[in-house]
Length: 415
Image 1 (cartoon, rainbow, N blue to C red):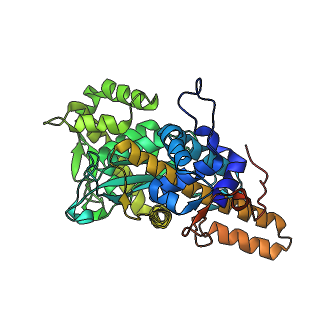
Image 2: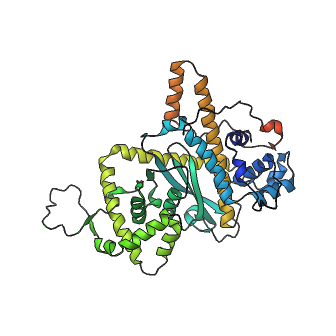
Image 3: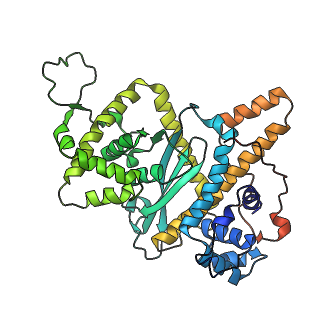
């Protein structure tokens, strides 16, 4: 609670949680009620159970705050405020591999849904005979969690990769990594045309097919150590080029999410011409990337490091979900996404507090050797840490408990 209150003092993220009818509604819930709602929903505790373990708020106030002031857009905007503050700090840049390039990653995490839900689906591998969903999270190499969504466990994660890269106003990715579940030739094609470098971690690289353009008569391939296994259909790409550009323009203008377009293209009984053209186009940047991965061990290590970090975030998510670490309590898709947004807001507040605390410690250290040791620890570690926080027990939302006991000060900010 202290972390949420301290970060709000610098970002005022609670201002984003407004009543939908501002013209006729002049009241505003207390900050304590907002914090209680964020914890009750985001930590999978539930509002009724939250009331039994809380002091300083009433049940009516808590329910009114969540029902009338919590919206998906508002919660995402609140989290963006926290991410924007971290983006302006100097300390997170120590975690960047290259100062001129920002490496991001995304991965899905499975959660069971025990209530009847149209958004959930069966997956024996993860849920046995039960149903569940996937919470898909995006992070960059500075540990900023800048986008998340929830979809059926039966859907492929690759359809949602472009959504996180486009529908965010703070983090601008240069190179993005996923695991094998987030990979497809369509993602290679669309990300290339949008100006992103796509760098997935292939589960079995030798099994991936390499492609080359056709009509390469007279080329001697006997000396090639790595040979292509097929030809890219450039004719279908030329035929559908205008449609490809129209689709990219729609995604670029954010008129429609890429995941909606991918679902539509996959819904045809036979592969749509635009689908086949994007797949053929994506085979070329995919082949070039595979050759680059084979030749560049530094790139391979960077991709592996990014995927290890996103899996560490999954452990962070389990720790924050103190009520039900592996379940969603909500049935509707929008309610599930609101719960995920609350959870992401809590995680971002903890990471932001860690950065503010470490920045203050660096300002206080006068010994050069100790300062360098702390900088080295930050550069080779992670601020996704929660062992110093108490996530269990009763919640006291009195003014005394929400007071900053550490005395965090805002460091000098960049642009």
